[in-house]
Image (cartoon, rainbow, N blue to C red; front, side):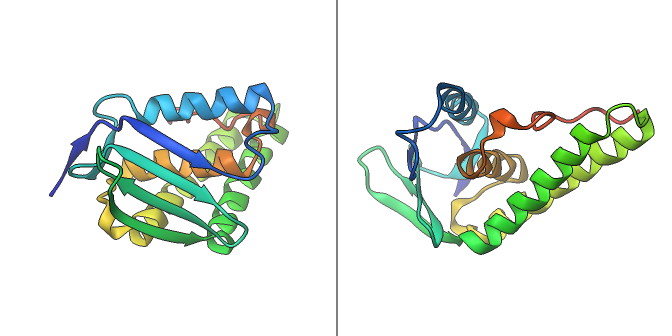
Length: 165
């Protein structure tokens, strides 16, 4: 059964966590706070903890109940995830370079960023079928995975989308 769950914890094990800048740690904390806000995630019933382990080859993602028992786990290949992250970052960098090129160009790039984020969310939903992710939850998970892979504190325009008129 799937329902809106309130995650108690998101636990991350990734290379470079210890040596990350204070700004990156604050970024990760903000993403985790959003994910653990009551009602923000749709996950498999009984989930209390989302565990993310990053390796060179894959990102291992698992859901655990309150007793630490694994409910479901899966691996997302770094090669595929990395391609989606690269596509997203490329659009964000193009947005930063488009300053002064007009509102129509900015809005088109912002829409491209949203489309790329949506594509990544659909990929995660397909890759993690037992997790019960709805589209907004999959977008939040991609945001976390991207921030673990790329220093998003150095990317202008990475947060949010403009509302198209």
